[in-house]
Amino acid sequence: MYKVIRKILFLLPPEEAHYVSLFLLQLICSTPFTRKLLRNFFEPVKVSPITIAGIHFRNPVGLAAGFDKNALHLRELSCLGFGHVEIGTVTPQPQRGNERPRLFRLPADNALINRMGFNNDGVVTIAKRLKYWREEVQPYVDLEKPLIIGGNIGKNKSTSNEEAWRDYEFCFERLHPWVDYFVVNVSSPNTPGLRALQDRSFLEKILTGLQKKNQEMKNPKPIFLKIAPDLEWIQVDEVIELVLAIGLDGLVVSNTTIRRDALLTPPNTVSRMGAGGLSGAPLKERNTSLLAYIHKKTNGKIPLIASGGIFTATDATEKFKAGASLVQVWTGFVYEGPAIAKNISAASPV
Ligand SMILES: Cc1cc2nc3c(=O)[nH]c(=O)nc-3n(C[C@H](O)[C@H](O)[C@H](O)COP(=O)(O)O)c2cc1C
Image (cartoon, rainbow, N blue to C red):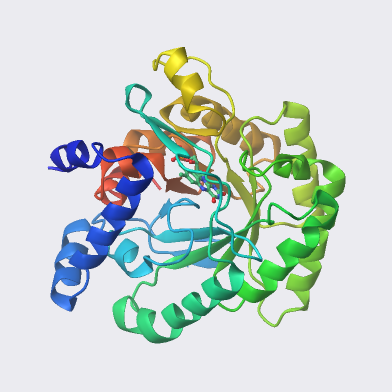
């Protein structure tokens, strides 16, 4: 069934297809009856709830950052059976992002290339939206087994790397009452210079500042760091050291890659798409080895959330075996459709 819908959606440009499908999903979910139908259909049946960093996830499958950047579709995504949704990346000021087109499909590779550039409504608007969700919507739609919300935070394009820590702290404070956990995003390839924040000096300043603020709060929230798959091993070692020293709650492994090797899509077509992060199947192997490396190196001391090339239960099982505690999907959702959370949860071994 989704194969047919996908054929139609793929006739549209990728970004437009994304908004059209979310609009249609919202329409379908506009009555309690249809929401219940959807829930019954997509609710994962054989699930293992899991607790990480003190948070109880109703199942181990989440939606990765960048899908619902503005927290506009939590009710619908909850109906599709996700255990958690990571909103954002959220920046202090609203941003339009890069010029369109900025999202491309590579069907031969089950992949996407994007250079969205942190388009989002800004943290003030998004925090208001989350407050409304928490107080007016969630108590009526999924109180029994609540959807977990992650807040993925970043910096504005116009903020220098030296001042970046201010942007992260600003977003952290505004979102703190409304999200269950945080992800510090220093790994998107689409904000110039952002990935340099993975260097020890910048990272230490950002993370210690956030952790200090967090500890001063009445109810501290877990903080995760999202890393790029393109880090050298020596950089990965540095990240591990820092995460352990600061007592961060875990890592999201990983963001999109700037590499373009071993693609089936013709090189000319790929180069016409231009710069951006590649996601989906081509990311899978590198992502799994990164997970396995960190898990082994730390004796499993750092909780890991896997994000990269997960389409099926078999893919998810590989990530769990490599040491992940949770998995997230993005490109897989586009190619596999709305039953992806159910399909993955059904066969995952955790
Ligand atoms: C169109 C698009 C937008 C994305 N936006 C963000 C973002 O704003 N912040 C972020 O941390 N990751 C973002 N990502 C990366 C995803 O969260 C995910 O880590 C990555 O795509 C790898 O997973 P996948 O292979 O399942 O797609 C984006 C990915 C795509 C395809």
